Image 1 (cartoon, rainbow, N blue to C red):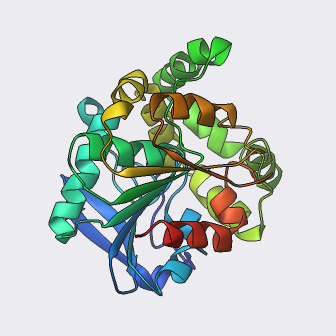
Image 2: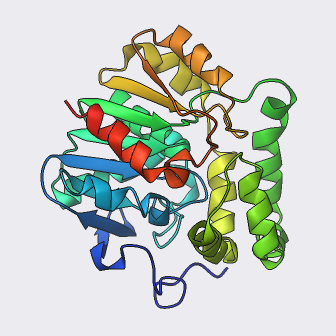
Length: 286
Protein backbone atom coordinates (compact mmCIF):
# COMPACT_ATOMS: atom_id res chain seq x y z
CA UNK A 1 0.00 0.00 0.00
CA UNK A 2 1.55 3.27 -1.15
CA UNK A 3 3.06 5.36 1.62
CA UNK A 4 4.23 8.99 1.45
CA UNK A 5 7.64 9.16 -0.25
CA UNK A 6 10.13 11.90 0.61
CA UNK A 7 11.11 12.24 -3.04
CA UNK A 8 7.47 12.77 -4.05
CA UNK A 9 5.17 13.97 -1.23
CA UNK A 10 8.16 15.50 0.58
CA UNK A 11 8.95 18.03 -2.16
CA UNK A 12 8.66 21.52 -0.74
CA UNK A 13 7.85 20.10 2.71
CA UNK A 14 7.64 22.80 5.42
CA UNK A 15 11.02 23.38 7.13
CA UNK A 16 12.53 20.75 4.85
CA UNK A 17 16.04 22.06 5.56
CA UNK A 18 15.58 20.93 9.19
CA UNK A 19 14.66 17.36 8.20
CA UNK A 20 16.71 14.22 8.75
CA UNK A 21 16.07 10.48 8.74
CA UNK A 22 17.06 8.46 11.80
CA UNK A 23 16.88 4.72 12.51
CA UNK A 24 15.63 3.97 16.03
CA UNK A 25 13.29 1.47 17.73
CA UNK A 26 13.45 -0.63 14.58
CA UNK A 27 11.94 2.16 12.46
CA UNK A 28 13.19 4.76 10.02
CA UNK A 29 11.96 8.11 11.36
CA UNK A 30 11.50 11.48 9.75
CA UNK A 31 12.63 14.08 12.30
CA UNK A 32 12.94 17.84 12.14
CA UNK A 33 15.37 19.72 14.38
CA UNK A 34 16.09 23.44 14.62
CA UNK A 35 17.24 26.10 17.07
CA UNK A 36 19.44 26.12 20.16
CA UNK A 37 18.68 26.06 23.86
CA UNK A 38 16.64 23.78 26.17
CA UNK A 39 15.23 20.76 24.35
CA UNK A 40 11.55 21.02 23.38
CA UNK A 41 9.79 17.94 21.99
CA UNK A 42 6.74 18.47 19.75
CA UNK A 43 4.36 15.60 18.86
CA UNK A 44 1.64 16.06 16.27
CA UNK A 45 -1.83 14.51 16.35
CA UNK A 46 -3.54 11.63 14.56
CA UNK A 47 -3.40 11.87 10.78
CA UNK A 48 -0.85 14.70 10.73
CA UNK A 49 2.95 14.93 10.49
CA UNK A 50 5.65 17.52 11.14
CA UNK A 51 3.87 19.97 8.82
CA UNK A 52 1.40 20.51 11.68
CA UNK A 53 4.11 22.55 13.48
CA UNK A 54 5.29 24.33 10.29
CA UNK A 55 4.77 27.86 11.59
CA UNK A 56 5.26 27.12 15.30
CA UNK A 57 8.75 25.61 15.06
CA UNK A 58 10.60 28.66 13.67
CA UNK A 59 9.11 30.84 16.41
CA UNK A 60 10.19 28.44 19.16
CA UNK A 61 13.63 27.84 17.62
CA UNK A 62 14.65 31.31 18.81
CA UNK A 63 14.84 29.99 22.38
CA UNK A 64 14.78 26.17 22.17
CA UNK A 65 16.30 23.18 20.45
CA UNK A 66 13.06 22.02 18.86
CA UNK A 67 12.62 18.33 17.96
CA UNK A 68 9.56 17.23 15.97
CA UNK A 69 9.23 13.70 14.57
CA UNK A 70 6.58 12.14 12.40
CA UNK A 71 4.90 9.59 14.68
CA UNK A 72 5.11 5.92 13.61
CA UNK A 73 3.05 5.24 10.50
CA UNK A 74 2.47 8.95 9.94
CA UNK A 75 4.06 11.05 7.25
CA UNK A 76 7.51 9.71 6.37
CA UNK A 77 8.11 7.49 9.44
CA UNK A 78 7.77 3.70 9.20
CA UNK A 79 4.70 2.11 10.82
CA UNK A 80 4.91 0.02 13.98
CA UNK A 81 4.17 -3.72 13.78
CA UNK A 82 0.74 -4.72 15.10
CA UNK A 83 2.01 -6.10 18.43
CA UNK A 84 3.55 -2.68 19.29
CA UNK A 85 0.66 -0.59 18.03
CA UNK A 86 -0.80 0.81 21.25
CA UNK A 87 -0.46 3.97 23.30
CA UNK A 88 2.29 2.47 25.52
CA UNK A 89 3.92 0.98 22.41
CA UNK A 90 3.93 4.36 20.68
CA UNK A 91 5.35 5.96 23.83
CA UNK A 92 8.21 3.44 23.99
CA UNK A 93 8.97 3.94 20.29
CA UNK A 94 9.31 7.72 20.70
CA UNK A 95 11.47 7.15 23.79
CA UNK A 96 13.73 4.92 21.70
CA UNK A 97 14.07 7.71 19.16
CA UNK A 98 15.08 10.17 21.89
CA UNK A 99 17.64 7.68 23.21
CA UNK A 100 19.17 7.36 19.75
CA UNK A 101 19.27 11.14 19.40
CA UNK A 102 20.73 11.35 22.93
CA UNK A 103 18.19 14.00 23.88
CA UNK A 104 16.12 14.49 27.01
CA UNK A 105 13.32 17.05 26.64
CA UNK A 106 13.16 19.88 29.17
CA UNK A 107 9.67 20.71 27.89
CA UNK A 108 7.14 18.91 25.69
CA UNK A 109 4.07 19.93 23.75
CA UNK A 110 1.62 17.80 21.84
CA UNK A 111 -1.55 18.12 19.83
CA UNK A 112 -4.50 15.76 20.28
CA UNK A 113 -3.16 12.16 20.31
CA UNK A 114 0.40 13.51 20.46
CA UNK A 115 -0.39 15.00 23.87
CA UNK A 116 -1.63 11.60 25.04
CA UNK A 117 1.64 9.99 23.91
CA UNK A 118 3.63 12.56 25.89
CA UNK A 119 1.59 12.00 29.06
CA UNK A 120 1.97 8.22 28.70
CA UNK A 121 5.73 8.68 28.31
CA UNK A 122 5.87 10.81 31.45
CA UNK A 123 3.73 8.36 33.45
CA UNK A 124 6.03 5.52 32.38
CA UNK A 125 9.08 7.67 33.27
CA UNK A 126 10.39 7.59 29.72
CA UNK A 127 10.71 11.39 29.80
CA UNK A 128 10.86 13.87 32.69
CA UNK A 129 10.02 17.32 31.29
CA UNK A 130 9.21 20.24 33.55
CA UNK A 131 5.87 20.66 31.82
CA UNK A 132 3.67 19.18 29.11
CA UNK A 133 1.57 21.56 27.04
CA UNK A 134 -1.47 19.89 25.52
CA UNK A 135 -3.27 21.48 22.57
CA UNK A 136 -6.77 19.98 22.50
CA UNK A 137 -5.39 16.76 23.97
CA UNK A 138 -7.14 13.43 23.36
CA UNK A 139 -6.92 11.97 26.87
CA UNK A 140 -10.41 10.65 27.57
CA UNK A 141 -12.59 8.05 25.82
CA UNK A 142 -15.50 9.37 23.79
CA UNK A 143 -18.77 9.41 25.70
CA UNK A 144 -22.11 7.96 24.61
CA UNK A 145 -22.67 6.39 21.21
CA UNK A 146 -19.34 7.67 19.84
CA UNK A 147 -17.51 5.77 22.54
CA UNK A 148 -19.17 2.52 21.55
CA UNK A 149 -18.64 3.01 17.80
CA UNK A 150 -15.30 4.80 17.35
CA UNK A 151 -12.73 2.03 17.97
CA UNK A 152 -14.92 -0.82 16.63
CA UNK A 153 -15.51 1.16 13.42
CA UNK A 154 -11.78 1.79 13.03
CA UNK A 155 -11.10 -1.94 13.56
CA UNK A 156 -13.72 -2.81 10.96
CA UNK A 157 -12.15 -0.45 8.43
CA UNK A 158 -8.70 -1.90 9.15
CA UNK A 159 -10.02 -5.36 8.26
CA UNK A 160 -11.17 -4.05 4.89
CA UNK A 161 -8.05 -3.51 2.74
CA UNK A 162 -10.07 -1.43 0.26
CA UNK A 163 -11.13 1.18 2.86
CA UNK A 164 -7.84 3.19 2.94
CA UNK A 165 -7.58 3.09 -0.86
CA UNK A 166 -11.17 4.25 -1.29
CA UNK A 167 -10.72 7.04 1.27
CA UNK A 168 -7.51 8.23 -0.42
CA UNK A 169 -9.01 8.03 -3.88
CA UNK A 170 -11.89 10.31 -2.83
CA UNK A 171 -9.65 12.84 -1.05
CA UNK A 172 -9.87 15.77 -3.42
CA UNK A 173 -9.38 19.38 -2.29
CA UNK A 174 -13.06 19.81 -1.36
CA UNK A 175 -13.02 16.62 0.73
CA UNK A 176 -9.88 17.71 2.60
CA UNK A 177 -11.37 21.15 3.24
CA UNK A 178 -14.58 19.57 4.56
CA UNK A 179 -12.65 17.13 6.75
CA UNK A 180 -10.68 19.92 8.44
CA UNK A 181 -13.69 22.22 8.83
CA UNK A 182 -15.53 19.37 10.55
CA UNK A 183 -12.98 19.69 13.38
CA UNK A 184 -13.91 23.34 13.86
CA UNK A 185 -10.79 24.73 12.18
CA UNK A 186 -10.56 26.82 9.02
CA UNK A 187 -7.75 25.46 6.83
CA UNK A 188 -5.31 27.70 5.01
CA UNK A 189 -3.73 26.81 1.67
CA UNK A 190 -0.77 25.04 3.33
CA UNK A 191 -3.03 22.85 5.47
CA UNK A 192 -5.04 21.77 2.43
CA UNK A 193 -1.86 21.04 0.48
CA UNK A 194 0.06 19.00 3.04
CA UNK A 195 -2.83 17.13 4.66
CA UNK A 196 -3.97 16.35 1.14
CA UNK A 197 -0.59 14.89 0.18
CA UNK A 198 -0.71 12.52 3.16
CA UNK A 199 -4.34 11.51 2.92
CA UNK A 200 -3.99 10.68 -0.76
CA UNK A 201 -1.51 7.94 0.27
CA UNK A 202 -3.44 4.81 1.34
CA UNK A 203 -0.51 3.63 3.49
CA UNK A 204 -0.75 6.76 5.64
CA UNK A 205 -4.53 6.36 6.00
CA UNK A 206 -4.14 2.67 6.88
CA UNK A 207 -1.64 3.51 9.65
CA UNK A 208 -3.98 6.16 11.06
CA UNK A 209 -6.88 3.68 11.16
CA UNK A 210 -4.70 1.01 12.78
CA UNK A 211 -3.59 3.47 15.44
CA UNK A 212 -7.19 4.52 16.15
CA UNK A 213 -8.28 0.88 16.39
CA UNK A 214 -5.68 0.20 19.09
CA UNK A 215 -6.09 3.45 21.06
CA UNK A 216 -7.02 2.44 24.62
CA UNK A 217 -7.56 5.60 26.71
CA UNK A 218 -9.18 4.37 29.96
CA UNK A 219 -5.80 3.30 31.47
CA UNK A 220 -4.40 6.75 30.69
CA UNK A 221 -7.32 8.48 32.40
CA UNK A 222 -6.93 6.16 35.38
CA UNK A 223 -3.21 6.97 35.74
CA UNK A 224 -3.45 10.75 35.31
CA UNK A 225 -3.45 11.46 39.05
CA UNK A 226 0.16 10.34 39.35
CA UNK A 227 1.48 12.53 36.54
CA UNK A 228 4.64 14.28 37.67
CA UNK A 229 5.20 17.16 35.20
CA UNK A 230 2.98 20.22 35.20
CA UNK A 231 0.16 19.73 32.66
CA UNK A 232 -1.16 22.72 30.74
CA UNK A 233 -4.48 22.15 28.99
CA UNK A 234 -4.75 24.55 26.06
CA UNK A 235 -8.33 24.00 24.93
CA UNK A 236 -10.36 25.64 22.16
CA UNK A 237 -14.07 26.27 22.58
CA UNK A 238 -14.58 25.81 18.83
CA UNK A 239 -13.03 22.33 18.76
CA UNK A 240 -15.57 19.92 17.27
CA UNK A 241 -13.29 16.88 17.63
CA UNK A 242 -12.38 17.15 21.35
CA UNK A 243 -15.25 18.95 23.14
CA UNK A 244 -14.20 21.74 25.50
CA UNK A 245 -16.16 20.08 28.31
CA UNK A 246 -13.47 17.39 28.43
CA UNK A 247 -11.24 20.01 30.03
CA UNK A 248 -13.43 20.10 33.13
CA UNK A 249 -13.50 16.33 33.25
CA UNK A 250 -9.70 16.34 33.12
CA UNK A 251 -9.50 18.92 35.89
CA UNK A 252 -11.55 16.55 38.01
CA UNK A 253 -8.97 13.83 37.46
CA UNK A 254 -5.97 16.14 37.85
CA UNK A 255 -6.86 19.28 39.85
CA UNK A 256 -3.31 20.66 39.46
CA UNK A 257 -3.71 20.97 35.68
CA UNK A 258 -3.61 24.53 34.33
CA UNK A 259 -6.28 25.50 31.80
CA UNK A 260 -5.40 27.91 28.99
CA UNK A 261 -8.51 28.77 26.91
CA UNK A 262 -7.88 29.25 23.19
CA UNK A 263 -11.09 31.10 22.40
CA UNK A 264 -13.19 30.07 19.42
CA UNK A 265 -10.36 28.38 17.54
CA UNK A 266 -10.85 24.81 16.36
CA UNK A 267 -9.09 21.49 16.81
CA UNK A 268 -6.04 22.69 14.83
CA UNK A 269 -5.70 25.81 17.00
CA UNK A 270 -1.88 25.71 16.89
CA UNK A 271 -2.01 25.82 13.08
CA UNK A 272 -4.60 28.61 12.98
CA UNK A 273 -2.67 30.76 15.50
CA UNK A 274 0.97 29.61 15.61
CA UNK A 275 1.98 32.84 17.35
CA UNK A 276 -0.47 32.15 20.17
CA UNK A 277 0.72 28.53 20.46
CA UNK A 278 4.41 29.47 20.55
CA UNK A 279 3.84 32.18 23.13
CA UNK A 280 1.85 29.80 25.33
CA UNK A 281 4.61 27.17 25.22
CA UNK A 282 7.30 29.74 25.99
CA UNK A 283 5.36 31.12 28.97
CA UNK A 284 5.26 27.69 30.58
CA UNK A 285 8.92 26.86 29.95
CA UNK A 286 10.10 27.81 33.43
